[in-house]
Length: 112
Image (cartoon, rainbow, N blue to C red; front, side, top):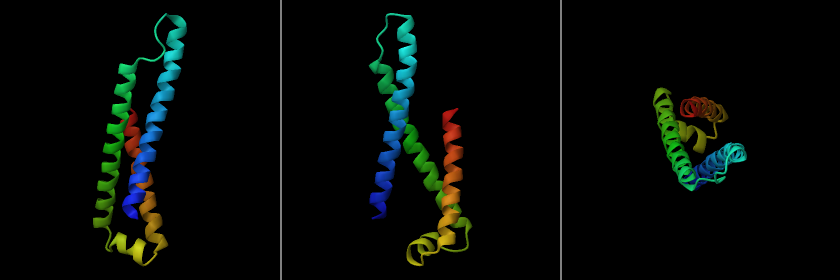
């Protein structure tokens, strides 16, 4: 079940990043196309953006997983057991806070 959730999250994040890249590139292409007789979509550039988005998604998820493991090692208890078996809400909130803060840092670092 957990693997299915991780895979679904990865797919959704990848689709969201690709959609964001497509929309921002499309807006820039429309502004440039109005000024010149160039095609609105350059598929080589678009393919590069898609590959870049997928690579950044994979790298970001790996960094988040490593950050979770570092946090798990730093705590005196097993987070997986606390969250999954004992339904410890405080541990879940702590992990969520760490993942959100790491996500913000990774997004800022990759975004430039």
